[in-house]
Image 1 (cartoon, rainbow, N blue to C red):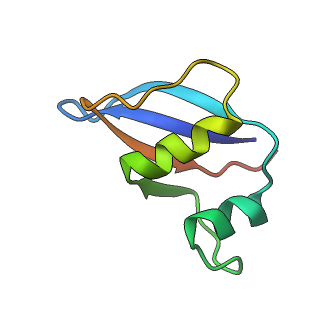
Image 2 (cartoon, helix red, strand yellow):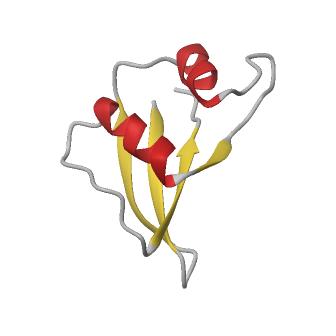
Image 3 (cartoon, rainbow, N blue to C red):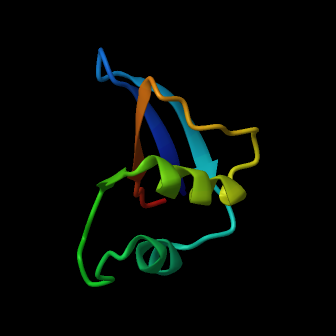
Length: 76
C-alpha cells in the first residue's frame, strides 16, 4: 500500500497518512513523472499533486497550508 503523507511544516513530524487505494506503483509513478525503473521510498509533492491524489483517498481530504506532502511508497 502506498500513502499520501502530511508532515507539519514547523516540526517535520508526520501528522496524518492516507492510504492510496485503486492506484498501483507503476501508475502512481507515471502520474508523478517518476521513472518506473527507479526504486523510491518517498517523493515530495506540490499541493496540486496532493489534491490530484485525493481521488484515491477514502477519507475527506483538503490541502492544509501548514503541511508538506509526500507519497510514501511501501512494499507489502
